Figure 1: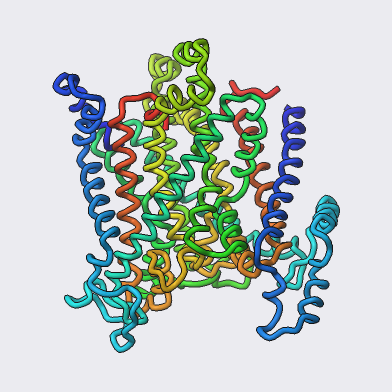
Figure 2 (figure 1 turned 135 degrees about the horizontal axis):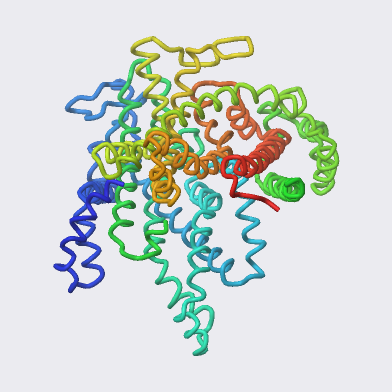
Length: 299
Length: 312
């Protein structure tokens, strides 16, 4: 990992930051990882621009201007116009909203389902068998096929995209959580809590989840990049956000027809996906290296 | 060993039945109905009724399922709604184009990923190692359909070197030029995963005692790397390749759709869009069975690569 190289100076000067809180230690270590810092800055700007899309976009993303269709990038239209004369740059800004919103919502759901199933499977032996069989079943199912089938059968919409990606992909998180909890379950502090009469729920919330939260944060960050790739693939296939809502995958699909004359319709939306996904990957790797806990290293 | 294999096969069958129940339930819970695909815009209720009757959709769902299951056990997956042939025929006709793509892509991935991972591990923390790991991160972030489009833009549209669509041949084998781009996309997209696995398992393997023993015996570094370290380090890669066989279908859906490749991925896509229930069911069971049998083969392969592994 690129970060291994960066970890060594961090440990060499460890003494300087030992006094700070854990958060400050982690932030300091993270700040030593330059690609991760750049990626974090990029994502911050992207998120702000996406939230402020109506202010940031120079044009309305859905208003058509047919006489000005398929214009190459210029000062007026930074990234050119599409087949309906709509400004690509503005559409990309609005497209970021869709991709980011879907990604955050989906990952929240994945972590929720995965953690619940993982804890239940690890903690209650009776549930372990059936729950893990469901995971096996999902493993045997070709992932994108399941997703496409569900979306096509139940109809394409942003809500369905979130729901069905989450339902198809919680298994990795569940397996991770189960493994972690199995090893935590026999720790003395869990036994002590049990002996002092703590309820199962209290043990999960107070003793188990805090001990796997670092790992979950890393999984969540890396999952975001994975979900963005899936969401854009779905909208490329016409099964994501529906027109006229702009989405990066949908823009690529529209541009496909004009590959021969309008390269900008294919290059820029893809670049947006690529950079965003890469940024989340760098941040995820950076966090894993910055966290000093066992659960983060186990991801 | 035989008992192990028999046991594993016995576990596969209930899983497949469960899977078919799941898919069947999903199809019947879904709001859309497949007959609409086979009717013109202005249809009468009688026409709709006739289509439903013909497709066997008028039976109660449980009976529909049991009829399907009964036939499936005997190897008959029924007639397709929209292809005019049986499900087995349509799957078999699409199998070979996909296998051709996948086998070539797999070779490309392994040929690039294994040396990259081994070099990365041998020269750990060197500049080369960092370049390789950074490159894998780039690869992991690349949307495969965008990569496909960029290749098409460069090599088909601008340079005119490679054909953009189809297999380019009526015969058994696809035309070599038509294979280049789909194989490149599929092959390269797996390289980052495989290279990461090889790197980390090589690092583990190189730290083992038997490497020290081999070095003490005076073996050459090349021999140690290949015969001692890599032999064991390749095991996790075999696992990962086995698992990624689940993508034999899904990974190719997007790529085959873009390159208009007449394989299983495109079939899956068409079947879903046309709501061709028998094809969807058949494909699901077929791929799931394929994945499970493949993972069994992987487990058996283990015993040959690493003689320490035994199944009882």
